Image (cartoon, rainbow, N blue to C red):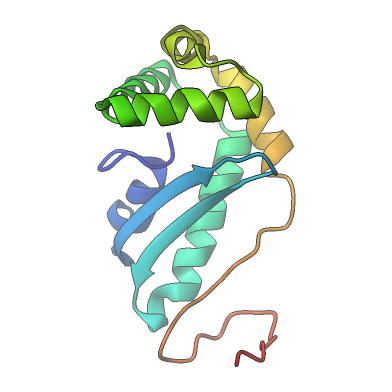
Length: 159
């Protein structure tokens, strides 16, 4: 829903609504044995960074609060299934996936269940998950060669 070029909410918000603020935008998650994370990223000019951050946070708020229509949900499910199929092209990819599924405790045959599970996903379930996992204060990281006026003013001593 959030990151599927060109119709994902983050692409539409940062590239398609009003003046385009970014060169590229994406969202992704990283899972693992310990808690993972979900991230939004984009490339932009320092002068556009604050507005792009604000719009990104608005996308997160939208995901938690606004209805997800059937067409958007169907598009997202289909995109997820295609991405899953592409990630299982080789024997090595399938073996790695099965091994990780065993490690995570879901069983080596988990990948075969994913299409059914994805198709059964409802907008209400996505809202529940978004409100559960996107409830904390976001960590915002800005990498730039020019100053960005974004609160709070904290600097890290990097050696």
